[in-house]
Image (cartoon, rainbow, N blue to C red; front, side, top):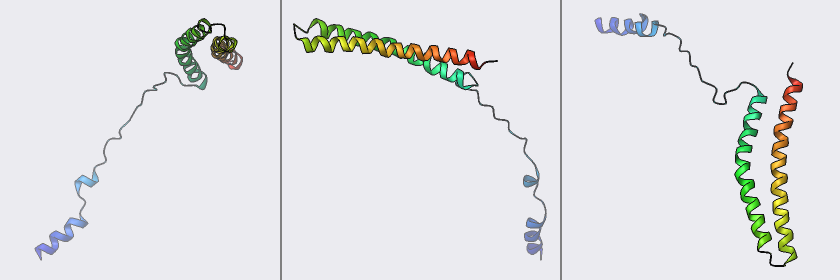
Length: 111
């Protein structure tokens, strides 16, 4: 009878571990981007691209200059070197324009 009472008592009575409600845990996550709106994120991406573009443009201009210097009278190699320098400059100009467009859009949309 005692075994039966103990077994029933186990399920009927409230166990204190299940009765306690834990304190709610508040989890805060810091914003890794450092900003809260899309314009700020776009500016951060464009700034990162500008930082990557400067050494790439320098390397491409050096490669284009090397192609021009080693053309040795070959018109096709000379054109290839000129195109390399031109496209490197145009690529950098596009990235600079992206920064300018971002600034213009931000100034137009900010009240």
